[in-house]
Length: 529
Image (cartoon, rainbow, N blue to C red):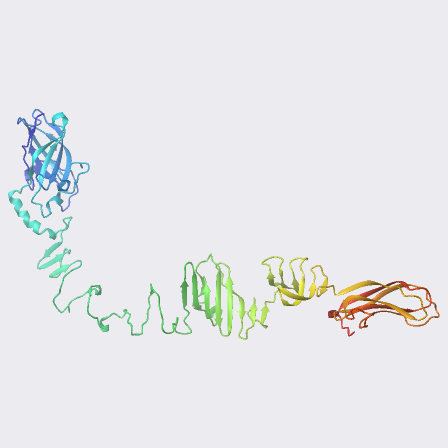
């Protein structure tokens, strides 16, 4: 294949005949001209023989538009597309804009290529694919400049008036008689603008201005008399009737009142995270008082309102000389559990405490000192019974003085039912074996000292036995007793109880002397010895 000569013609910008003979795809009609350009040419090879000379033939052709005739810089290549065109005896006709995108090359709307400040310099380039030596592509040179047809010079006026339509060629300026409308199809005044007007200055008194947006005021002061009654003023008493939101902190230098009279039942909602708290008054049904409630409050009609029905409720009430704490289950009005009256009596489960600490008139456990459920250390009420109990039989109840960690024990109830005073069983019986008493014609006796102090214990002989042969005619002292205070050598120490046995006899020795003594803690008896 020989070189192709650049022999072709260009028809552009309003050649009616070419447009009439060109097949245009069917599309919906609109107010904008087609974004297509007709292009016709005549191609011959290097010998002057037309392409497709013997029969029409299809060729793949790339059309490019540049803003410079010679530059190859990518930034100067404005547009490109590829088409398969039919050349018949050298002639071809195409519609630019109907081809396919060339990979990596720009292909904007054709109308955008002729609006820039350098729009006078636009050049078209044609490359026929696969017709060169060895099937190479051939680019026809030189590039040809787009030129103006005679009457197309009139379009300069349209260029100067291009701002009268928008980018979609929709009409922006409309004239109706002597009225001009901007973005207004039927203007009703000398200048009727549908949109924002921007200007550096305005002249006139402004007495006829209507629908003035105060957002556009950048200086000056508007007198209070010109402000709407709905505009808040810093130095005037005001009533806000709509819902208002304060995004920042609010500081009040005077009292804050919610509601203005005894008939107003308003509430203050306090939130924090997933919290729903209320400060409110509710004469019905709670009577006089101010209430701090969580997840529940009573409205002005005395109807309970629970915000999160799946959550439990609570309330703190302060009133005339009384405070109450109340709790409730999910979606339930809180019930009073703890109350304090005007004289300081505390009621648990009752709102009328008659003593410093009063429980409700109900049987059952009242206090747990240790243990959260089941068996525990505490106090309870049964039928006609006050109960003081531990959690198991191996636990004791102890009375004493001092502190829990340093207790001086005075009395103990064992869990098994035994009693102890100061750590000992309060009643104890001991058997004492005394030395023998030798036979004689005079009084003689024997004594032993116990370990029981006389200031803590009382002592009494509850039984005794001896073995002896005593003459009936004998007379004298016979004694078996518990004694105290006899000086040494009788008792040692003298502060402990002693056991004394004496016989006046003339028979055999008194032997196997056994004496049973009962010792009783003095806390249990009145013993003046």
